[in-house]
Length: 488
Image (cartoon, rainbow, N blue to C red; front, side, top):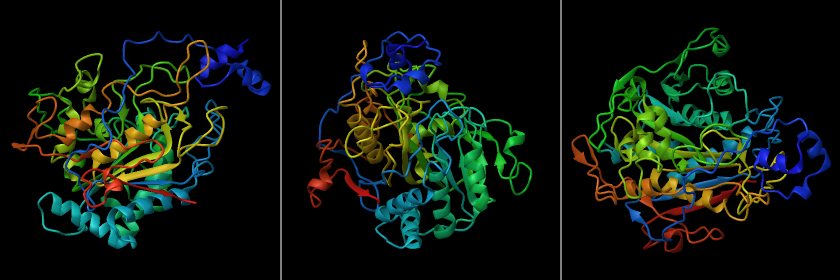
């Protein structure tokens, strides 16, 4: 029989043993307790190095602007992590209308236009002008690729409640593109080149937008047949082509290849998750602790290359990723075949995570104040963030994640925290922001030219006020402007 202490170790929850209700203890009797992994050599000691000291050059229609839309209760899954009777991704657990409202809010705030068509026109015009083209909007023959994070999806039918980008978020973005940006359905490609796209995503989208294309790593299954066409129409696998060069001088055979379909796209929407990448302790999640600190905008393109494992060594602090070293994320973000095509950066924060493959995490601190015990409760982060500056967006995401690691220490015999931030978490952001003269001394080169700053990096003043330099001084501030909107 599982005792109280075993139950705490099984879930990794920050709770007092004496506080566990009898009904929870009864349910815990059926659990198979696994042995806790040994403490790794990895350091989980990251702290912000400086506050309100921006580095780099802010990007966007409103430079450095990040919009954070928060709709408490939009995500309201019951948290029954072991049951597949009502998983988190169903519409009964995630309010599509409120997600749609959050996505609409970040689009209008970033563009400065209240009308959706004008908002998208501004965004497309800004992107074309920023890469040296004429100031023009979207053209009907242009492909928009949406890179989503499906890192926890190893088959079309999900067998656990690990989190990925939510179907409701994907749907809301596609609805905006089709109805207001004027993008034909068959010119939209939703993809993760190294994972399956789980059926809840494809079916929800195809129900209303039947010609949207999806791309996944592996062969199709019978369960993935199109509900309208009855075959595997609009589902494809990558055709890998060499397109990426890395500035550390290594000619990676597989990491240099991206899907030809993405190379053919004119624009990319980088739709990542608000989540950490490493956590060493919990028995809720199995497998390795992870390779690096966070998985947000920067690392999302590991699902756009054939051989991400070739880059793990230069990302992993237990291997080659020492402080102030080369980051391949700079090259991925600066590549004209990939990152330079990005018209919009987004973080899905409906159900966030503490690890690369992980159950959803409750966020106990401001502005969320979620309960973290019992785990099976319906309070989740329920937010969407977006920017036209990917460095700024990941900087805000990191501040949010770090703020949630505080005041949530486990009170078991190991004194384990609920969530942790691994060492060197913002090193890649320093490299991106100062790409022309990075801390590593790397000469980042793309298309034969030195890479200039990819955006602005900064840490907010405090977890309570959450102000960046442009919030403090809208006239002279040169860093991030954070707009927080609470959606009722």
